[in-house]
Length: 512
Image 1: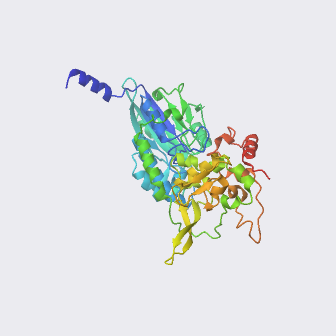
Image 2: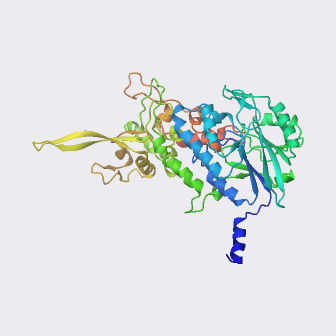
Image 3: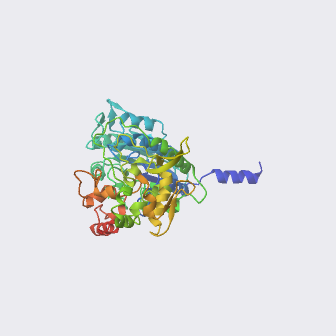
């Protein structure tokens, strides 16, 4: 090998470290990529990885709990998909060389055993000084990480995990008094001559404040459990408290951690600028794509619990006959085209998303196949042995991938313009939007009449026809909550009443 080759090899194989940088997150809730429902959507693991690769520092990556799941008690129908999603998320964090995490209450959503099995296969070091299971410590109380600063000096950073007993932990999990546990660990770490002490906690901001107030020796508290958006670290005595909002929309960054100063600390928004370059796909991008391709298979599961009184939904093709004016208004709204965002992001079989983006595909239904999102009826000609023509009624199942472009055409078409569904099919549908949907027995896709007006139970032919439900804030907030429609809310997470009225007017059908 020539001298020039050796020189180039040394340059390319050595990553220059400018400083030790702390990167932290909390309450990620299992999110792999940004939810397309939000305006100016931020977040996603691809963006996080690309941002981390832009840093030339020696990184210490920490997560303060609720990394894997978004709910304490998710529907059974989500179990298969969400566990596979959690596995994908952990693999992605392994690729990013994530250092440590602390358990969160929602990480136990599918039981203690499921959580332990998941994290056992990950390279992430889980820490918990005051958690016991069956009277045994499951995770080490702390770990000392050795990082290099810009001068090449080794910095010893002691990180310990801490939880609070007043949070809703599984009954088999016991949490000891946090402040007493912290004092014991701080003493142990000081004996080992660490340069920095970080408490990685899942106990909420108020309890983090109490911890800082009642202990000495903690340099930083990286907290979770309350989704606090601390744009500037909160200082109590000599301790800085950190949180980075939720769902990886922002990640916390503190460069030059070894200096114990925070002038350059900030929350980095994971925006479009951190997407993969066009035509280039990172390993994490490929990993997430693989999970999404598997969603179709994961979307069909049998629910063991029986659901009584399952409602029969009337979908919009049944409403058009009497409500033509309302149909023509509705089809031009974003509600009518609600499947497109899932189609574009390859999430048509994501059960959690389809709960709002389709009708009747409930998370609690006894058995819901998402492979069928519409049923179309047509007459098929059959010849008898005597040469007489006969017709049989065929009911054809239409997939989400096929019905979504059709609904998109309905959404954008002019009323007088001729459109069609499947021109190559000998029984294809041709006509205006209302004419082309006429042969459909059911179309469950998109946000439609009974999302808002309650299930009408065979309306208008029922013996006891129900009146249309009045639309209220509660009706809309079932789906348009803070997580999915954050632009509807103020900075303190309260509904913006003025904006709500504007939004409601945009989708309110005319009476005549």
